[in-house]
Image (cartoon, each protein chain N blue to C red):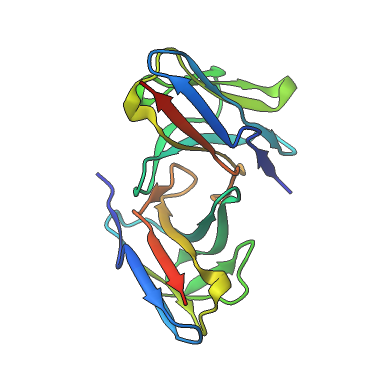
Length: 113
Length: 111
């Protein structure tokens, strides 16, 4: 069965500093990988996704993620955080040929002024 | 833009009540999903549907049922609400294996 681990429950970062959120997955073959963001009181919005090809994926709001097969990781990064990036971030893995997603527990990001 | 709407943002019910949560999508997506979201546990799949009148259990279906009579509408039913069903409920839809689009969520409190 597939699984997703986000080791950091909370991260606090200063505005303007860089951000990296970790995601490790367990899956038997090449997965589909997603990062979603949930702002307070909102549903989930897709930041970026990886299906195949270039392992460095660009997303919206200045985010990027890198797929590393050898480490079973799909970490999310942003070079300079804005106060509006305060939210909860979810990594998810999907099965090829299917449409179900398995989500990690989420990482809540707090941004200090 | 894809729009997924949920009937209520906040709902308070009493133990033993029958509860209906409604989800509507406007993009003619075949697949629709119900998740519950709890702190530290992320999103867990309750049920999903890949066509009208078709449904499959997700990871935590106990205590829930679903109905999909029309393609655009997917309902989650709590036959007899219990306090451990207090949670945030999120609906999503997708065409094929692409991006899932989420509604704003319903925060259900069962007293």
